[in-house]
Length: 294
Image (cartoon, rainbow, N blue to C red; front, side):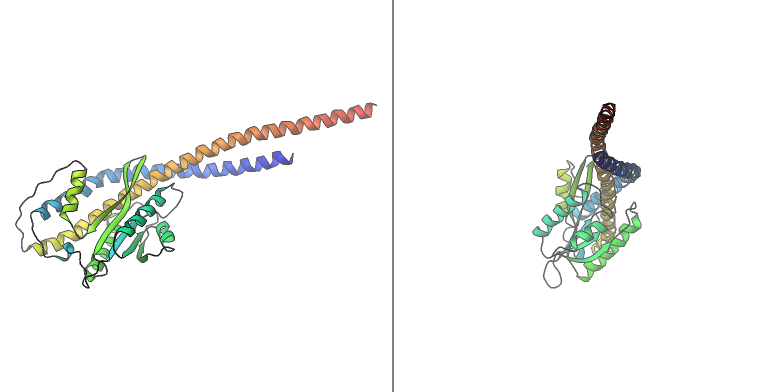
């Protein structure tokens, strides 16, 4: 009966694990629904702020503003990469895909330095050769506009001071509930050409417009660009949060199915072991009775 006891203990451990995976699945499903509602509201704002910036920038010609100049004060390029990961694990390949995208981007840009959002990213990149200059964590809650403002204010201040002169953000784009795409995009310096390529890749077209700027081009863009950066970061945070919940829901669903399959196999093994034990006991009893009868 030792074997059946061992199987019974394993079955109990799997049942306890299934309780956890099912609970996490329900929590992620609830968070995903809420996140998708916010994402549906944020996407039009996210897209409109990009098209508006392109419309204003396309007819501006050469703008004398620090937000359009990629060169640093010392002539060197330093690239800040904002990395959006989760604060919790058990989300399948969600964070691993971001890590690969960041590693690829770091190999392409000059002098990469990291600004991390999420505890998982910090735990990973603290052991990497890349310099980490800041880490933000929001404890797996739904991001708010104030969170994006906090990050954007930090980015703008450090960019203006000359800590870095290019800014990219890496986050997970939720193409669909089953297709989550790690995405890298440049935020600063603002580049009309990159925006145009993005619109064309999405099948959209933008035409150059002419504007009059008051009191000056420089003042207008120095006011608009921080708002643009905040909008881009907010959209990325919302997409990343929703993608994380979708990834965790799928991972917990798969873990639950695997656990139930293991439980079914162990149940069969347990029944066989128990039946073998009972058969052996009956054989011993019959054998003992025969010996006594003789």
